[in-house]
Length: 298
Image (cartoon, rainbow, N blue to C red; front, side, top):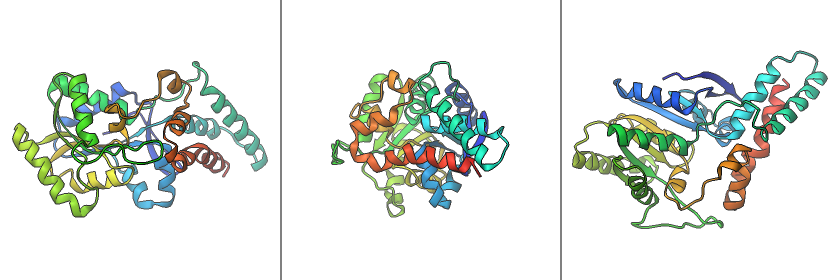
């Protein structure tokens, strides 16, 4: 499943210049084929984690699609394209890099600057639900966990976040074929048998022999590892790691407004609304752009 232009950021493959329309065309095409496919929604945190985790880097690089989930990724792509045409000694490249970085940063506030399109986990999930409602593709939601501003769990027990999200999705997308949902299973391999048994029970109950989509929200690496271990056992055609998407789809957590997204300040919104994620947000900004900058000078 190729799409757009595959680039490499700090050793991690990302499919750029592939808007949501083209992504869905590729997905619809793959649904008609035999076999299983998996999609990574690759954000700066993924790329930073992959620097110290070769196994995770291979998971992303071997994905059928590695989509740019976040402003940091598309801005890094823009910056690296600018730097690829700059030749000179280390001092010249250093100052040229500063200029290119400043242009990229200021461009994030401009409507005229043309970055590659972002494809977030939330946006991709919404398009999958639209497709499911129109074409009756089967969908299962797995995982998800919501915390308050202090990092404490907001939901527990039978009121799990995947089921809350599923109920809201069914209301928002009439006709959507969400055949089941659960946050009640662990991402750990020791829990796979129980998880698969439940998914297959939902498939049997709804008359589904091969699941079309499974959206897995266990957090980076855990969700990708779960998909790779289990997608063919379900069986399922397309697995997508969606991170915190269920939090937003359920309405438990607020999404950044369009204005915040347009100026690429989602990281600041998340820092204000989810301060317990401070260390993760710092990896995305400023550590990620700094690492991209220094790597471009080599």
